[in-house]
Length: 332
Image 1 (cartoon, one colour):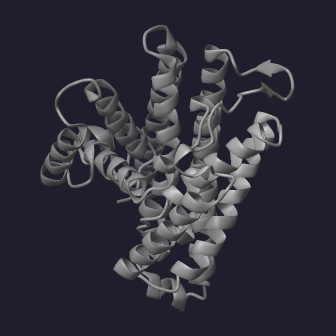
Image 2 (image 1 turned 180 degrees about the horizontal axis):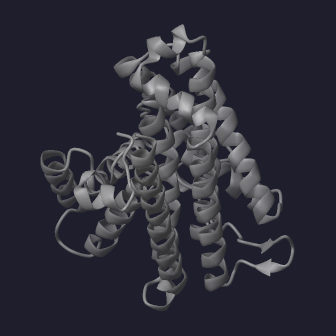
């Protein structure tokens, strides 16, 4: 028996090693494509895509890996944009300090909102996050530092660390790309840590996790704050890319948009939300000047996805024979 099991174990190790090599090759190709992309596509469009891809990936950290559906993530995205824009324009802070303030501000908002919302489950959790998000929207509408419906405009990009001029479009693009990659690495490490494993167990069977002695509420709150902070990172960078922060980023429609992106790509996967964000942003960009309403096309795409691809486009691919053979897997 031992003689038969050893070759099988060796073969399994070889398969996993090959799958790992394939994943690394895919990642390397994707990174090279992103580096070369500004030569063929409009850099501002690409930066918007990367910001929303990070936003969707951060949201998926809560929905896909913890099982919590939030309708209030626009609070952290738009709130961080306001914090960063105000700090850079009015206080004269450097771009990295402004983004850090946006991340910390979003994390603080996430701590408050999460502490209130995690007391409930399911639809009640979602409705509480929506209600709190709307409260923050009306705060932004009335607050003096946000300038109401005009928003904060003409935000200077400044110099990163006092040296690198972010006013140059290509320099700004590579800065956004670096932030995007770092954000995804943080999410990957968080998901594959012992903390992330406990979050998955809570998602699968919360009562069992409680019976094993885990403080479920603390883990949920930790995931909520981490998701909010990474969402704030995306929002702060976006404020510098477009050089303004407006009410659009804190509306409930923005929260719905990131849910759509995540579901289209596939929850419980790292690549799914990125792909979903790319699809939605691309549709918005290319249909903006056409006579066809963007929302109708996006809605039709979502309907087709729900009917034919229950796990999302990337999630369904991971579930196929080819996807499993390549070593990909979906947590959904």
